[in-house]
Amino acid sequence: MVRFIEEKEQKEFIAAAILSDLPEWFGLPDSTAEYIKHSKELPFWAVIEEDSAKGFIVLKETSKHTAEVYVMGVLKAVHQNGYGRKLFEAFYAYAKEHGYSFIQVKTVQEGHYDEYDRTIQFYKGLGFKEFECFPTLWDEWNPCQIYVMGIV
View 1 (cartoon, one colour):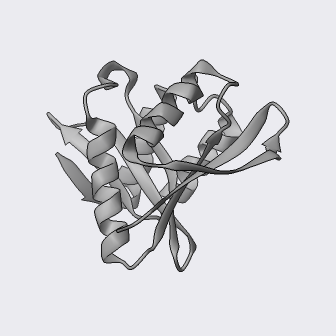
View 2: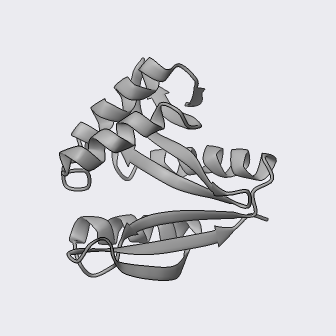
């Protein structure tokens, strides 16, 4: 079941637990710590089953028209079980209800890492479209690709 999480300590605990299970995607300690720190202050959903978080997603407003998937993670053991899609559906409904026109997500450009290529296929499956690449936003070996979708 997807739940909207409000308690900051719970957000921090869930984000830390799940991101630590995903070192292939979140292997830079400083970046991971930033995600955990900022997630406490932002709209946050988690899939909770059997009193345990299986995944989470966080919304960050990047403009009055655009909501960003700031960070998202699902435990490796439960990948391919629909949790990511359920989380995104809750995120999308909230973004629509709050008047956003667009959703964006940043990830590493396709063709650099197998893990991120799988992530990109997930986002494309949700309906995201390639928007723009910033080759040095993060660093040269992790070119930042932005994907977008309109909210209808």
